[in-house]
Image 1 (tube, rainbow, N blue to C red):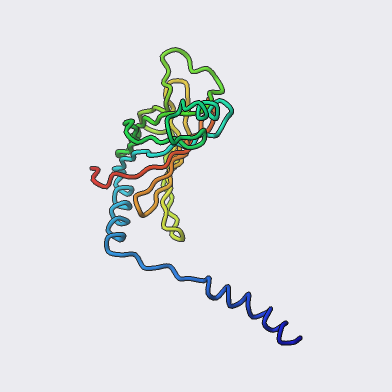
Image 2 (cartoon, helix red, strand yellow):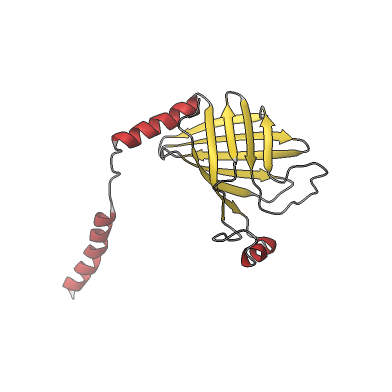
Length: 185
C-alpha cells in the first residue's frame, strides 16, 4: 500500500518536471526581426496592415455569415481582411488609420460619416509601455475624428505580429490581427 501512495505522490512531480521547459533562444533572424520591430516603435515609424477582424458576434453578423454575406470562410466573429487596403500608421506625433468596421453602431453616425474606423491627426493621449517579461510593447492612444472618439490599444510582438483593439462610445468594440511593415521609414 505504501508503494502505491509513494507512486501517486511522485507521478505528479515527474509530470510537472517533464512539462517544465525553458524558453528556446531566438535565432539570428528572429533577433533581427525583434530588433527592427523595436527600432520602428522607438522611432514612431509604424505601418500596420490588418489581416483579420474580430467583431463582437451579434445576431445580425451571424445571419450575414449564414447567408454568405461576409464572404466564404468568414464567420460573424472572424472576417478575413486581405486585399482591402486597410492600414494604421504612426509617424512621429501623427496617427492615421482606415480599418473596415463590422459591428453595430450604438448611435447614428450622421451624414457623410465613415462606415469604417477612420481617423487622422494628433492623438489626445499617447503612451508606449514595454513589458520586459513578455517581450511585448503596447501603445495606447485616444483620438477624435468628427464627432467620434476612438480608444486604440495596440500590442506588438517580436515576430512583427500586431493586435489592435478599437473602442468607441458609438460602436461595439472590434479587434484586429495584423503585421508590421518592417520596411517602413
